[in-house]
Image (cartoon, rainbow, N blue to C red; front, side):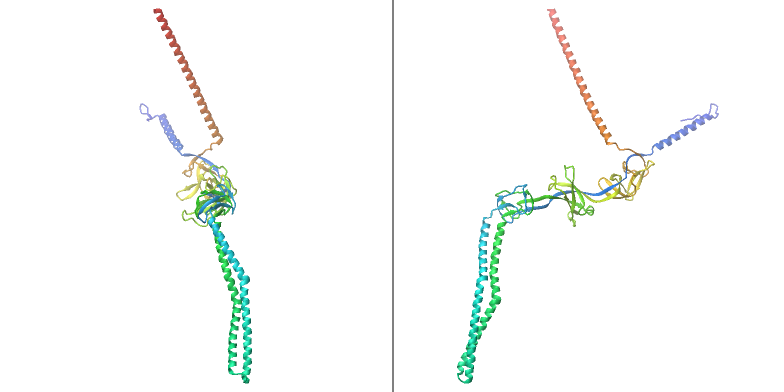
Length: 481
């Protein structure tokens, strides 16, 4: 662009200078305005920080188990003679569930019972009759030996006196002395036998008889136990959930015959990471969410395993349902939400509004300032759950926190706060769009119908023309004839 500042004869023209200056200034202002318009502006949405209660929720998948379950297996191998229950039958503890073939066991038990009765009778006889007779005989023998000893002693003393007087020979005194020694020996032996029988014999005789009785009794009880193993009884109250065999099948020892579950109390077992399990304790409230069921089932934490599972490096946690629910069945997988702790009147923001600063590893949120700019606020985050986060420090209740459009936005960036679209408006728009689409479809159907009518009318006209042509041709032929 050229500006003419001089006239034909080289004279300076002030008007040209003014026009040039104005043009330069206008160009400069235009550049400054263009640079100002290039300042970045980000559209965001905000939500005020609210003061409310927030809970630390631990979510995990868990499998439902009955609190009590018994797999009933026989202790002997035998053919199944009778089943008294079916799948789904409710049973009580000690109720007879099945019977195995037991004819041989019954005979063995009867034989052992007879041997036991014999031993019992022998013991009774030994206690009441046999032993007292032996003691009585020993007492009589001891008394007789004592009398014989006393008599021999008197004879010896009498002959000793006579011998000293010279009335009898030495031979008679020696005979009396030998008789006394023999009587003394017999007396001592009889007294000792009586004492031993009274002191030891009675105890040993009773022990012998009692031992025989106990041996027979033990044999009988063993046979009776084998017989009882042929009758399968329920160890718990519950419901029969499995019965894999039928009457006539061979039941093998220690192999499952029936399964009984107590479904009045159900628990969900889950494996929680160490960091989350450390926040849980027995008694924490929980919820069990069953697939296909809208309302969760209330429960509570009943067990936090004190040991770590070495295979998965997790901790097993049990959640028990407070009330029975038909939708909760053993074996299904549920989602368990356990409340670890709750903070009252906390400053809460949406979890999507909290960001991590990669430079210093700090946590911050973006607050929309009154100067229409985004300002980073370093915060300390407390409890986090799926949707919200507690801000322990850094912002105040009511601060407009940027919840949408704030990712990777630098501090001081110019922002434009947009209001979220109202659900009613969105629904109305959708309804309007649906109505408009329906109207268009109806209009298209009407147009298609009109086109079809027009086509039918044109076809009829062509048919009439063909008829007229045919009639005219026939008339011409007739005239020629």
